[in-house]
Image 1: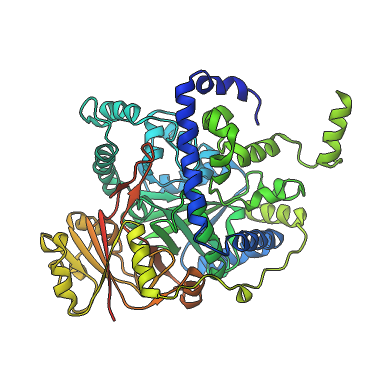
Image 2: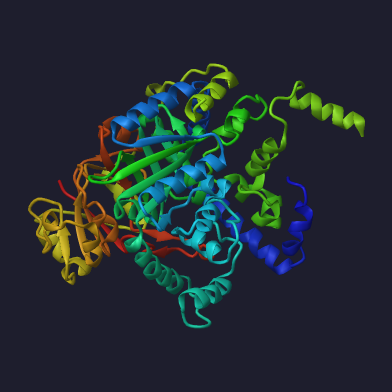
Amino acid sequence: MTAGHPRRALQLVQNPERLHWHDQAVWFVRQKRDIARSFVPEWEELRSLASQIKAHALSRLPDYLEQFESRAKAAGAVVHWARDADEHNRIVLSLLRERGVTRLVKSKSMLTEECKLNEHLEAHGIEVVDTDLGERIVQFRREPPSHIVMPAIHLKKEEIGALFHDELGTPEGLSDPKALAEAARVHMREKFLAAQAGLTGVNFAIASTGGVVVCTNEGNADLGTSLPPLHIACMGVEKIVPSPRELAVFLRLLARSATGQPITTYTSHFHGPKPGGEMHIVIVDHGRSRILARPEFRASLKCIRCAACMNTCPVYRRSGGHSYGVTVPGPIGSVLARQRDLPPMPRKSFRAQWRDRGRAR
Amino acid sequence: MAARDEILAKLRAAAAPAVELPDLSRFAPVTYPDLRERFAKSVIEVGGRCVFVAGSLQDELAKIPEFANARRSVSLVPGVEGNVDLTAVSDPHELNDIDFCVVPAEFGVAENGACWITDHGRANRAVCFLTQHLAIVVRDLVHNLHQAYERIQMPGRGFAMFLSGPSKTADIEQALVIGAHGARSCTVLVTS
């Protein structure tokens, strides 16, 4: 948990009706996961395999990244490396500037949230449109996502209706999710058609083929990359899987764990640019090498961002994602955020530090 | 030092202990007694429609109201007629008003209703996402994603995807809405 969490949680905690509503909404998603896993008899074996594959990939990360880079280049992509968020943001901005891009559509990427890319690009005059519906909603509200899979889960449909009335001119009082989603579809179709570049995150990067895999339900990553000539894909170093066959393990787990679906609607495999286009891949460290060097924290790099831990956590459910004050909230977010605060390489193990801290009290 | 070399050096120095890659060939995932039945159920679960085609594809498509009423349609399936010639389209933006698109898939996956669709390097793959309604024509089925990836020859260059049902979102109070940005309906036509 981060400093100030109890204070920031007050907003939800002091409203029992809303607290209960949020708790139930999030728990409902966790229950959908449980139903989905009940149809997969080898579920626990899959989880164990996934963990071993990630441990293996992390143990050979530099080799796999080099292999990925050379195969991605062979497929026609340009590969960039960024030590930190600032370097990542500079690379993306210069790619856009060099091509005169002023209108960018984005699909969901927690990495770019972590790097505060939108703010950087907007400060330099680029229109950034988040195209995942939940992300667009929180972008309109000028607030970060409160959940990494369902960014607007903290909002009620009436609040979204009022927001869309202001932003999109929907009729006052309209709060039917279907009608609101339709208004967003029409609004965003215009943005897709006008975009000069599309940016996506990366769910998995395949070392043996140089491809990247992006999972969405809405189809926003696919519209965003198949219309404009430029596709920028941003990934953390830990997204590597050795080969396509390991994807089967992760894809069987990801959507079932996240939303209870057997797979996302779109699971897109990009190998290089579309004909006549350009594809740029930005590989980002931003503290990940430091995490890898810390045996106590290394396992956190295995996370595939399914958010099942958030949906399960009684604290998250009853305090809301914004109370954490970090990009990735909830249990895994508390681990990821904490390790960024810690000094790079402590002489003492984390356990010893913790013990000493206890003694000092 | 360049960013690339510095990052790789840091990752090498981090030296996570060697861990073997697990042998997936010894893994026995779930299979189904009736492949076609399971596939059809999965397609319906993900919001699609599944039709087993006995006669002609064109006849079967004609029964789909969205196809019958389509003003502009595209077909990438040999023997199925659309009224827009994709090869004559120079800019994918021109495809925004496509009502119906028929695409072939290499195979379908019974466990999740997904179909493996490749663009074979074509520039106009946007049509699959811009179209209001979609039909997928598939013959071969596999049980699960493991079998799927054993079968897939990843393109050296190009785009390919698993597509499972119509575009959807549940971002507003988790109410499932079909037709987010992409196809509003998805009919899978299984041939034999």
